[in-house]
Image 1 (cartoon, helix red, strand yellow):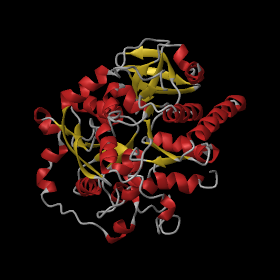
Image 2 (cartoon, one colour; image 1 turned 180 degrees about the vertical axis):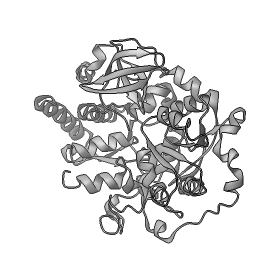
Image 3 (cartoon, helix red, strand yellow; image 1 turned 30 degrees about the vertical axis):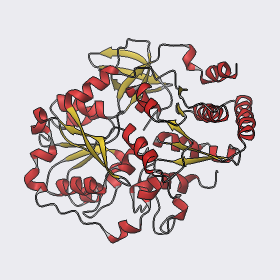
Length: 349
Length: 69
């Protein structure tokens, strides 16, 4: 980003922050925003009274431990499993998917569900471990319609933002809303949250302008949903993608790490596709599954970090027993996780 | 997971497009967005999720300037 432009935005932010005259806490709720904030050392560029805090925006991080353990259990029972990169390394009671693979389980990393659809030709029993928010649910729905079997942990994102506000554990003065979730859901659904929000894109400049717009709302006493990411977010989002989601999924309770059950946040595969729902198809395997929490997982602070309650550096494991090469929890596994990013970029901010 | 920059569609065959991200060529499924060759698209997990229609919208700073009044 050109220095002159960056200087100008930062000056405007400083002027508005001085006018505010109080400390404000803005939360980013998209893992890719957390990445941008760390990569460009944005925390260190902001006035002292503008604080940024990380919320539950990393899909790998918010996937419940029970779901991780279930999918590893399934892979170890001999069922081939494919999923997106990072989640393969999340540890659990039965180890990680990556460890299961080393011990002979058939586990595949994919970039797109298209690859899973192609793999199914040689591995008819293949299960796709579907995770993520409104942004990746349409791709999974597409794959199910193409005949793929799925273990779904997909979640709708807005209920988590509502839950954060309702729980009231952290004071949130404004949300940096997720750009690609918004590309799918549009602008209107956020209006029920009574805090300033700015839908923001993913360049350094996008994030700085998003922060500027939030502070401007706060300084002027407005509570609105503004859209900084105009180039991708239409007012009604992407109706084609939403239609596809609800052809295949129905809304249920969603299980989140750090939150437990959030009503209305889960996407369950509809009964007409139940033969492709791994939870149904492999219920005889899952019958033998018992969820046991590991002692080492209890020491991991990922659950509090996801809710914005703790910073990674307050965790006794951070940087000592737990690092990106030997992660204890998903916040250190995922390249979008708060711990992983703080570990890699802590000297920059 | 979220790519900051859009790619340009070079060719389309059925549901599949070839997309150029500033020299890096990738395939993308175009089921979720109505697109044609030459369009710029936002791609997420291998799928185009939005077409960029508004030239103005390219530049985040323009919105910032408008807001300045």
